[in-house]
Length: 318
Image (cartoon, rainbow, N blue to C red; front, side, top):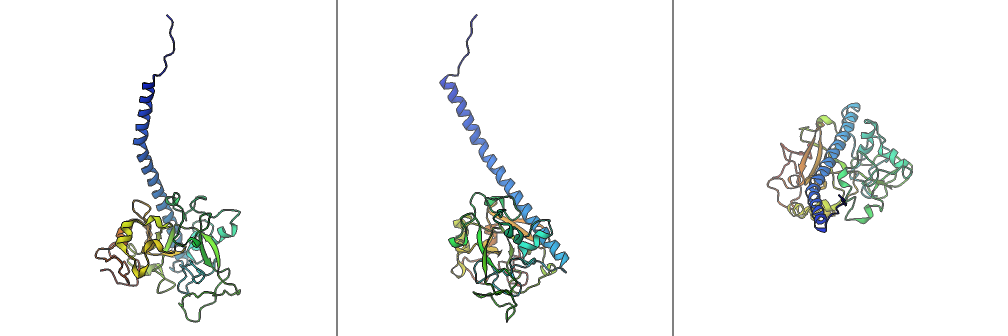
């Protein structure tokens, strides 16, 4: 008996396509959640490694933790030429200090090798300075001059050591020159993490043992790299202390505090505490402590039992 191959009818083909589309619709959310979970795990691992580098540095330097900028000056944010972070090559600045203790190149070494070897950022390479969660959005700022076309923040430092200021702790001034007579110069930097700026806000040469309670005091935080991480609800609940809302903050900073905290992972981010453990907190619970009034100023945002930003100031809110 003769037989011939039986072809799909149009109806059968449409049914198969419909089943495939249904399966894709069911699987995609799960795959997306798995991808987000993997990114969060990698981010937590990054900040944990950075923490190991910081604490090993402290062990080797009589308990003193790395600096957030030249320790003799104030306002060493690095976000403008009047706020140089100090000497780019300084091995005590945290972005350099952490690397040597975990067998990595210092940030200054990576900058020296750039552009032959691209610096890490959201688009280039795998680095402990880069959270995988920033890959989709990339860096951005309310101030366009802070961000390069190839995805870096423009930060400012000096090519040689700075002389000590006439008054210790005086804020960096525009035009401050280094020992070689040079002014501040800009370099590309990208880091999704920052040292807690409140630790060095009123004193320098801080020891790990001074950060108490160590299980609550923030050492490093996962920071925003894009204003889009701020939701309307976060902005409304935080307000605009001193007329400075969350989305307008300068992003090209080597250090940060609560108002730069990330919301990349399930509406929050990771924190490294002074005892070395890594924890997750929601951005809203960091930015809006119980009893906080939107826009309130002169607040430390310390929340005993949960998170301490300034261990040297007992003030809490409310």
